[in-house]
Image (cartoon, rainbow, N blue to C red):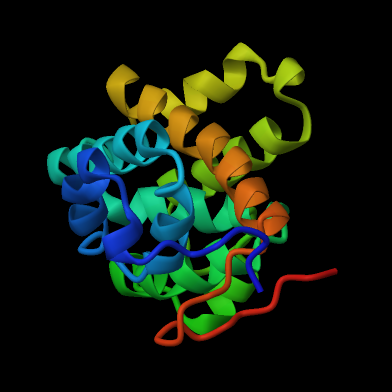
Length: 184
């Protein structure tokens, strides 16, 4: 049960309704949107940005979803793993077993070289971002340009915070999303 009320549409501030409605088209994130609607500047900023990023598709979704599931697995965020696993399977054509073993990237038979470096980078950002060396960026640049590296870095680090927000506020998983438990 959520630690804060899930706002219904009629309870949302008028200045947040447009993004609230647009956010519902982003995916099955209605409960997260209903929580963030308590603070219209947060909802408006986050979901407007997410919608713009998705529309531009600077980073192909098959790569973005690898990063999002990897960081969510590291954070043990059931909400995000449950939501993004189907997207990862669809976009990157990974099997359920492939997703289950995503963090074992080095010899992962279903990941291409770009996806492997994304998982490696995600783990490095999550575990100790102070120790990331230039060699990591050399490997990233074999597959991604600077704009893509900025977006990947942002989405991974933003994901760390959003995973924790979901867990701390105990945002419930929507009824139309299969729960993929990540608790240790």
